[in-house]
Each structure stands twice: as structure tokens, then as C-alpha cells.
Image (cartoon, rainbow, N blue to C red; front, top):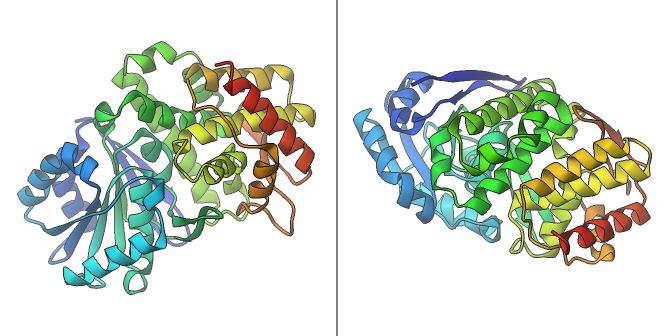
Length: 369
């Protein structure tokens, strides 16, 4: 098995993202060697659906490495990403006898990773967590960087903590069980990484539609590795989003508002970010931050990986919800805008009218996919 190690170096903790096809079957041995386990107990946090596909593989690997572990299955999906789910999971940890030496292993997509990471951050004031992402979106984004949290009705990820993992294990073969829609949701975060920091990655995705549709493992592995490299570089320079890390929110201001307005039931996260990136490109063009060619390349690349769910939200709703986004400071929205492919700026001059206009723009596009 060919393995790629990418270092994530932060003030609070240094760790590696280890990427390889077939990584899950080696996870037990890797956990024992990387974390130097002795008598610690593992708690695997996953969902019924994920466990159906990958539980047997992980079980064989953990048992083969003679690790002590328990299984904790929780509901998946954005609707379950709330404090009550975390509270129930914490009660189960106490039933398992988990203590401060225990380690949570998050096996699942972004929701499981965020929930399990937040649980690890607050249980007994913090225990270790290992991220084992099973969706493309989680592999290229959510599993790296230590952002954890849950949603409120008024907004996404408004309660959370920075809690860096001990290790991230990424098995590109796990994407084989994803349906087409879930796989496409992940590619939008890959597009984002290319837009904000890697022109070569964007070009790869821009011309890689056929390879993606055929689920070419070489293409998918290249997307994962390049995206994790981008995330690791940004997080290593800005762990807690005080500066550079804000660029990772490209497409998320309006994307999060779309999710909140539809109660997290209409869009997958990546799909909402896809529309958010098109909206951000429209705003950048209107503000003369980017050229028509740049806005067109972003828009066309996102739409090439559709179809996306239609946008029905009213401009007023998106203006209101975007004002409560975490990036809003002293009443000013801070938008990440691409000046060209691979470069961004942070603008606090985006008016409510521009947000409304961008919402109308994506509403129109969504009706003509």
C-alpha cells in the first residue's frame, strides 16, 4: 500500500494526515504504532449506515491489533448535528467507562467527524480523537484542522471548539460506496481548495469531469492529496481562523445561509457551498474584484459537476441569515472573494443589496441547469 503523510503543524498540536488506498484495513496497526497505545480504550463513533459498509473491516483491524474498544452509533445527517445528540453520546461514554485516557475514533462523514470531535473536546474537558473520514467531503476538508461543533436553528456550527485530532486516516477506497450525489458534494470542496490556493488543482478538476464520473481512483486520490495539502498549509499558518484560515470559508457565507434557510434538509453541505461559490464569484465580478473570465470559470466548473438542488430561498432570507454567520463582525459581513484562481481577498464591503442580487443570480441559474 502506497502511503502519503502530510504534516499538520499547529501551536496546540502537531499530527499527520495519512493517505492511502486500503488504509482502513490497516487502521488497527496504525493506531497502535502512531499513538503508542498501551491500555487505553477506544470508542468508535459512527452511524448505522457507515457501519453497514465499513464496520466489519474496522472490527477485523482493531481486533487484529488487540485493541480494546466499544462502538457508539449515532444518527447521521445535519438534522442530528445538535447538542442533544452530543449529550446522549456523552452519557454512553460514561456507560462504557471512558476516562481521560480514552480515545474517540470518528468513522464517518463530516457530521460524524464534527460531532465526535466536539464530544472529544468537551468530555472530561478534552480527550483524544482520531478522524477516519468516509466521504470525499470529509476527507478533503472536515477531517483536517480541528474544527468541531454542532448547529443551532439560527445557524450552522455556531457552537463548537477547536480540537485538533491525534491522527487523520484517509482511505480513498471508502469513496466507492458513496452514491453519485454524495460524491459530487465532495468535489465542490476540492474546487474550493483550488480556487483559494492551488491553480493546478483547479485546472485538474476543471478538466477532470470524465475521470470523476468514471470514479477513476487515480484522479480521486490526486484530488484528496492536493486538497489536504492546501488545508494543512493554511491551518498550520492560522490554527484558529484569526487571519489566513478565513479563506477556507470561500463559498460558505451564502452556502451556510442556504442550509439554515432550508433547515439542513434540502442541500448536502457541499452542494450549498457549490452555490455559495457561484454567488461569491458573482459578487466579486460586481465589485470588480475579478474578471469575467475568472467568474465564468468558477461558475462553469461548479455547474459541470451538477445537477445541484434548486435554490428557492428568498434574497431577504439569505441576507438575514448571512448576517448571523460566524464571519460577521460588528455587523459587517466578511466575504472571501477570489481575485483570480488561486488567490483571494477578504472583503467587508459586501452590501446586503449585493447579497440579495447574488441570491437572485443563483436562483435563476438553478432553474436552468
